[in-house]
Length: 369
Image 1 (cartoon, rainbow, N blue to C red):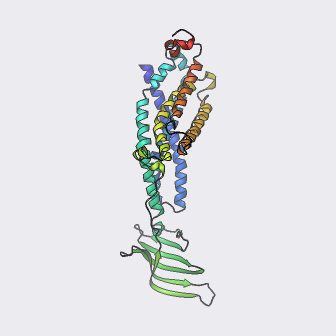
Image 2 (image 1 turned 180 degrees about the vertical axis):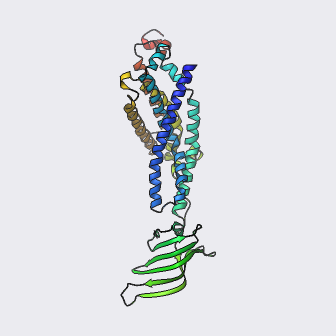
Image 3 (image 1 turned 30 degrees about the vertical axis):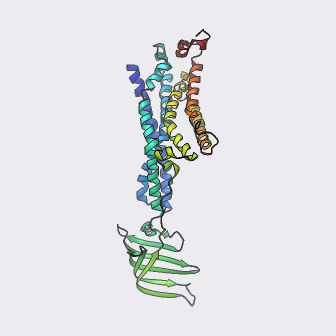
């Protein structure tokens, strides 16, 4: 049917545009956070794109419901604004048929969203946690960058190199300030290199042809010592296995876990694809506007509804995790509530008309069943 293809094309085009906007907002927010960690020396700069990609894959399951909801709302809102929906209604294409047209998207949305929330999102979360853990516990010498001061975790060393080789092994114009208690010493050399002891695994910065300055200038105990080689041992934090966040645990693990918090996490993953379909159906009656309201007439209401949904989602998650609600009730009521709201809006908008429900359920209009 031509109208069916037209509706599908309209919604798909709007969905693509909404996804682009949402992803740009997501990338900008995450990019700023990751750059902050890079500036503080927590993460190396080469991991920025990798972590951004993993963060996107981790959150794509929660982005899809938002994009689907607003794309249907905006696409149908435009049809109402241009009075194309009036022409369709006059041709016998009401909200019931429009909903059936939309349901063509349902299998694809369910497959993509379920694959994301049940598999790809936990995998991406685990990978991001492991990368961050490895970066935060890597050798402090690997943090060295040309022209930048680097402080050790315990604050006992401040290191600076003017230039270093691509493999970060060879150092030029090295400066190190060492602090032990109240006593400070400063070392400088023209060259240096990194060295790892094979037996102990300890890492050293070896400075070549330099000077050591100890004490306070002008005091009797101030000393200047010239050396051929001087090794500075860099304390390496022994990294334990990364403690994965609950969002990084596999769905299979959560399925067999008796922990209430794991049950809440599992249910939150399962209901997201169902909620996406429920939001898509809710957008159909919400998109109905008067021509004077314009395409964005119900946008504020849609934002308000989505904020309420997010609040209920977080509350339902906490109720299950804290044992305030039985896992059998869990979070399953949330998509049911959205569907009931959508049904109530359709019944209100079609009140007094012969509609699908009145034709098939006669007792609703007072006739004998």
